[in-house]
Image 1 (cartoon, protein in one colour):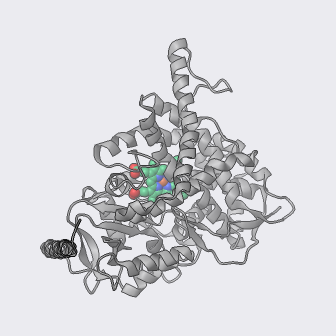
Image 2 (cartoon, rainbow, N blue to C red):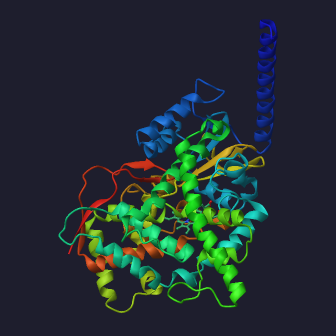
Image 3 (cartoon, rainbow, N blue to C red):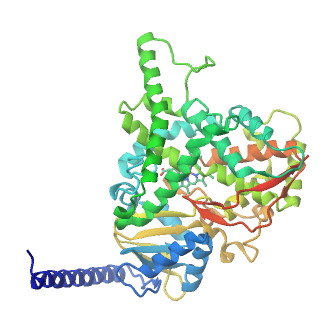
Length: 504
Ligand code: HEM
């Protein structure tokens, strides 16, 4: 039995130890900062220096009220700085909306940053997936990147025939009598169909069978939980949402069905000496097939698969939905794209043909710029370093990132910054791309060696969808007056969907 004085002595020693450790860490931080020539960073004010509860509460409130994007703009504006720092549950966060910092973190300084500590090592995503291309660093990352590379090669996605059947089914779902339709769930089902087709060689065909779209809905739950877990960092143990763990299990079972079938096909191929084929008789050549031939362990295979499945979900579909949302508000832009579509004529649509449509390309860029589906590039700093800019009174001095800091480079704010894009930065104006040569101020897919491997595929799919829709319909009308309201799952998506009408 402990006496009161023993407990008080223990508490007192713990507090002294904590204060001493904090002070030692402060001295170390200050010494390293000065040695790298970095001035102190602007700080988010907080009454609680230990957990930064004030900041955590403000962020949670913004998330709950679906004001997370506004919260980004407001917190930066209130600091009057493009780089600042905050304490979030005891972790130092560094926030930047400077293109030069995004560039350095992704290229020249990339070795000082990592994803594993904030995704795998702390257990944030491990109930759902293990190491794979989007969750590992160093040699493991390189091996995974090499493994998935063939899937993203141009030869695969430049064949537009692979999209045509899925697009026919999507267009069939669009009412011809100018009545309203919500395109967001339709694009989500379209993406589930195309991605199961390309990843597993077996489309789930949820456009024809809506009841089959449950993996997409379960993935939404999984991803919402992943975002919470990624944010909780040292307080991960607080996340005990049983429904989330159950959703992970359902998705595992779903993926395992495809994985077991692929290993069975491989076994049959070896035993019979005959190449594995699809029901159509065509030889198997899907993404999963390339993986099972190189990895014999089923769990490892699932990790590699989910590392691609996670960043692919709720990205292309939301991006397409956002683009249609914007087009429905700009009939003059639709008219210009439609002219390109009609001028193309009846010749077979090719990858090169799509790329040659300048105004369509500008529109896609403008949609990425104003509605980036990935808000920030987030990395753990693994070695004291200085990023190039954003510090000091004039905002031009280098900024200090200490080992252990979590650094967020915010593309949403960069893409809308009037200093970078001019006074009309908030306007949807594809014409700006006639002269814009944006480099690192426009990074919807990140940059450097970890750039999204699907970037050309995504733009091809979105251009293809718009081309096909505008060959069919003269214009698009908005059927919802509410302003765009982003709700956060992993990235932002429209809370009210994308209710529009297509006019023949
Ligand atoms: C609008 C659609 C998409 C956007 C805007 C997007 C954006 C991004 C961004 C910003 C990154 C992080 C880059 C970095 O850390 O520097 C990323 C990574 C990644 N994306 Fe995408 N993505 C999209 C769709 C997809 C799709 C459809 C797939 C797969 C089929 C995919 C697969 C990946 C993978 C595997 C990574 C990790 C790459 C690595 O760490 O090496 N993405 N994506």
